[in-house]
Amino acid sequence: MSEKQNDSSNPVLTFEGKKYSINDLSNDIKESIKGLQVAETQLKMHEDTLKLLSISRNFLANQLREKLKNIE
Image 1 (cartoon, rainbow, N blue to C red):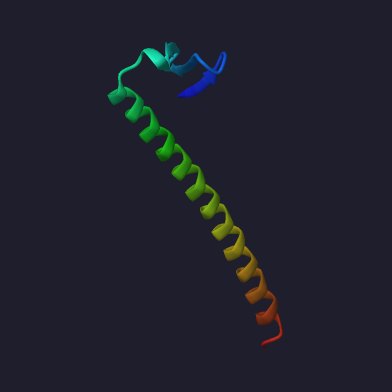
Image 2 (image 1 turned 60 degrees about the vertical axis):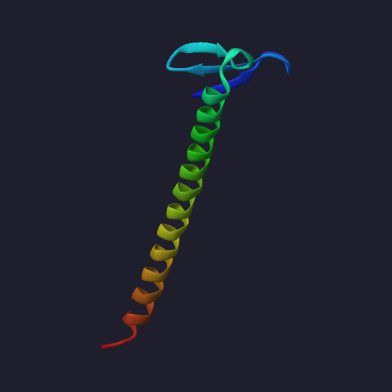
């Protein structure tokens, strides 16, 4: 789903290969679009959080590995 604006008064939604004038859609459909946009934003945020956690875990594992080298 992508929302492009040809001009500020006529935004266009492209969904599954079809284009729709957002101004011509019902309020119910517009609310569904907003909900989908929120869901996509949340997914991206959580994907970024998972990446940061993975990097942190790897850093901590490397720290532990280095510390354990000194123990016989």
